[in-house]
Amino acid sequence: MRLHLIKIVFFGLLMATLFPSVALGQSVQIILGSDEIGENQVWTITVTVQNDRLKSYDNFPDINGFRKRGQSTQSTTNIVNGQISSSQSVIMTYLPERQGTFTIPSFTMKVNDKPINVPGKKVRVGPPLQQQQ
Image 1 (cartoon, rainbow, N blue to C red):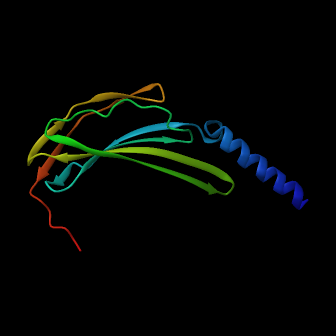
Image 2: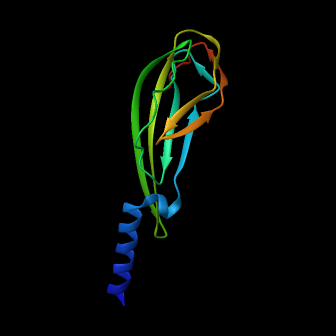
Image 3: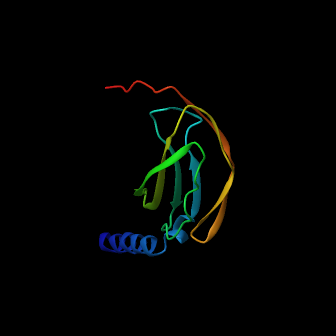
């Protein structure tokens, strides 16, 4: 009985690894950073794909009043009650060039060959914030 259960769990893990979008369904999110930051803080755009691989994505937009600082990636896998979920993210970091209120225009970004529409927003860049130690 115990060996049978181990085989079932192993098969489930194998199938979820090979076909994660079948296990829980793929979803794509593009998340814009905070509405307010200090002049010495960064602002981000995060692209996250859940339960699938992040195979391709368009260039991140250029934003007036900000300059691209760099890109990082992140991935996680969770197993809860035998259910496997995973996510892969790529994060673009932007530095503000000055204080003020900036309009991030709406844009479309293709992720895994699917266009994702992202609504714009306003971001207020205030004076530099004191760093906590």
